[in-house]
Length: 79
Image (cartoon, rainbow, N blue to C red; front, side):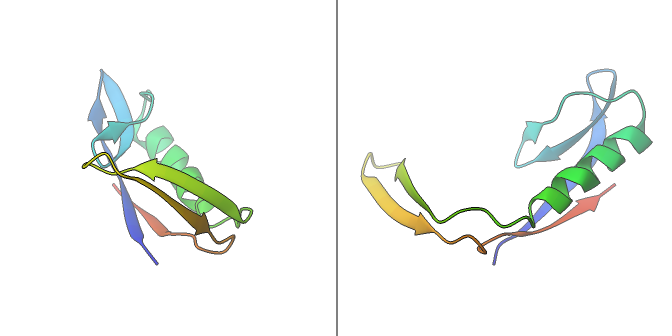
């Protein structure tokens, strides 16, 4: 199981949560950004459907794999 950490940081005149260099929309307060990040982290735990995923790697090779419904990351928020 993967571990992911949403971080709450100052961004674009407000606050945002970020993961791997990608920012959320800005929030007016740090508290609002933390609340939004916690909501997103909780949603990471919701099981999905058995899904076939197709993706291309850095070398340009295509892959196909199954994503299990319960294969969800462990997500938390660092503020």
